[in-house]
Length: 209
Image 1 (cartoon, rainbow, N blue to C red):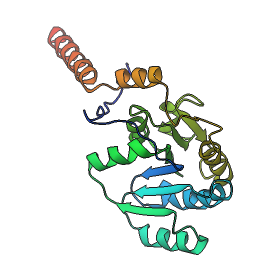
Image 2: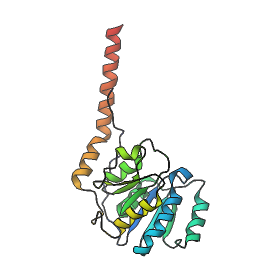
Image 3: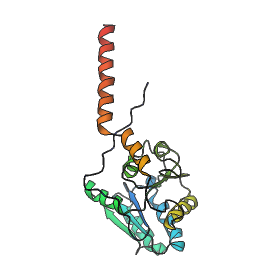
Image 4: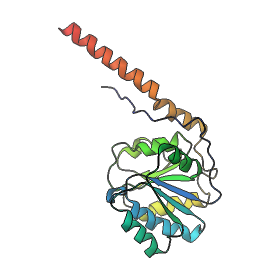
């Protein structure tokens, strides 16, 4: 067997990394319980104690939205938490361009975690959970950090380290890491690999018959 990495769309031609002046955390995904957004908001409350100007931007929609809005209000952080709803790809890129870090706090074992790859190839560090596919895409202290699934304290610790510029002080993944991940998940490379596998499979089948 051989591993064929899934393709990730390359950044748009106008994409430019432009982190916001104040710490900005971004979540992109469906607002379901298993995505861990409640844990993210609770961790963000802790982050605000040392970084009061930090912002949390939540892109996505789902059945948990109203409950999450109410939670942000209950915790007193509703002024710093923006619920953006569903966004088209160009708007997601704009959000990634300004974010200091993408946070993917899934409670379950994500099979891949495509959103992390999309962030990394755009130069955005990632904080994600360690059980599941994120562990195959996020390199510790290189492209971001991995935290135990469901561990609010550890999530808050890593977020605070970035908000206070103790980690990734330039808010950017190194160029060589970006280039390596972009090559590994290049759409053309993926297509060529798949064509080669199909060609070899067909030829093998013909010889066997």
